[in-house]
Image (cartoon, rainbow, N blue to C red):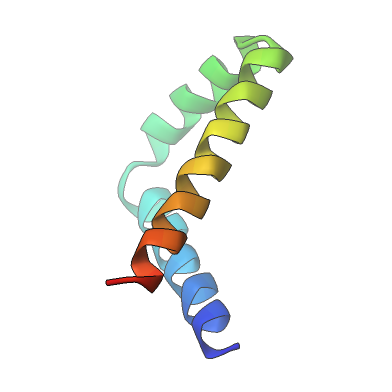
Length: 62
């Protein structure tokens, strides 16, 4: 449970850094995402999920 809370905290820090340091680039990124087909966004999301699972799995054995 401790690891989940730490991971959520790190996620909040990273999200906050993006919003604080590069808000205009984030706005541009949102425009690009709006124009990207839904299926492409789903495929990217699934790829990121797979990458995250792989990182967590590998980290368990380090």
